[in-house]
Image (tube, rainbow, N blue to C red; front, top):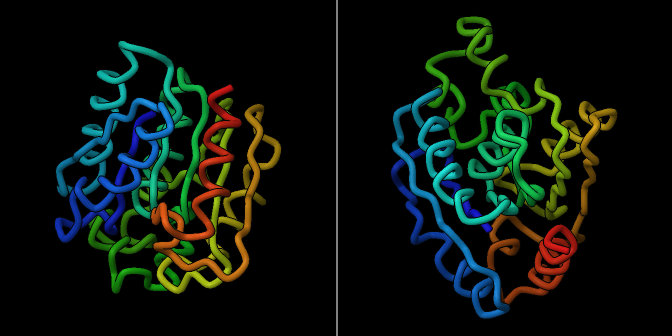
Length: 201
């Protein structure tokens, strides 16, 4: 697997934020490459993710997992580099214009893309996963009690991309919050792991 951590594309969080998740996956026998990237905005951050993915892909055709902003990068990667087994997006920022409208991360989307949708429409169109089709299987997993990235973001993505050649579906976990999905001790973890294993088969 390739893991892309979250943190609203800001330096507050790094790949150590997802280390416990990677360790839990490794304990089940899954090899994991955890990617780091520069916090330099679009497209530099995405270019780093592409480079990391290509390095990991030399060994196998991986499943790509991303959490929050990492989920955004994973979903966008699925439309750019389809030579992967599938994507598991955990509470992803899957629709950037909606995330901007809801002011997620106190202006995180504006900071990442260098302005508002009206100021940088071509950047939003390029960066937003909801605007790009994919032939890759994608599973979005989202908690209904997520107040960091509301589940409406994942619902909007699935509604927009349901006719893609690659299957896309949403798994809603009742009562789960934003960080339950990356906590191996939470009840949500069993759902995450089961969906990962389905894609690895």
